[in-house]
Length: 93
Image (tube, rainbow, N blue to C red; front, side):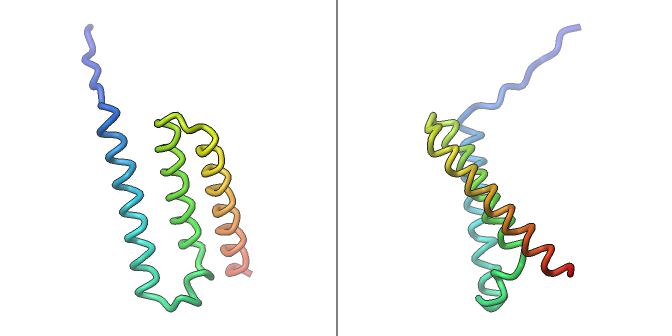
């Protein structure tokens, strides 16, 4: 049986990653507009979105062979995931 492999071009993936980053930035902008600025930093959703932006940016840097910047952005992503966890646990208790 012969399987046809669908190849997705690298340019399409990069455009998709940049689109996700832009969409996440718009999502943060809407979050700031809908809520007061003081309350936004108390929500774990804010930190999750920022973490996702750093994660997508690190994927973009990895594809362009900027390994040092990729590691830095992955570290920032983990840090914001940690802030999200702390904020979530504070709200639960």
